[in-house]
Image (tube, rainbow, N blue to C red; front, top):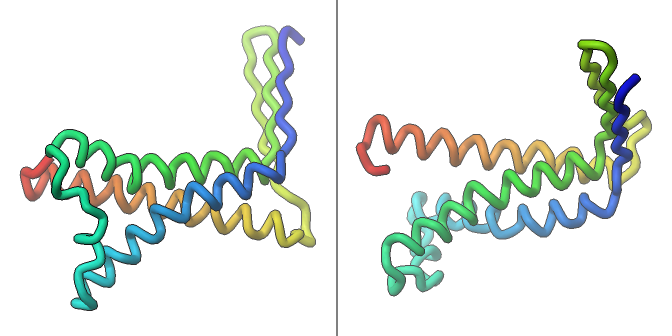
Length: 136
């Protein structure tokens, strides 16, 4: 065996994932509220005064980067992994939490699913805008 790398879950990263997911979830909730006609909560962000480049960067960081980072942080907080190399062979193992799940593990799995869901939803939205709406 040439190399063996092992990751043990760090439960504190679940809290980091939750903090990273909160702004993106609030932004998506505000967008849904605005699309349903419950006022204009996105106008209160004050991003209209910025040039287009920084505004897009902030928007992408809030809607795509933060959910992906939250999913990664919660995955590192809940899941374990092991990577081994041998003669021309690479072996990877993923360790899931064992039942019964603690509240921290359950919260971490929920943050993982929500972060992946929001990141994939935003990625799909961006692809649809670029392919169908020509607004990249």
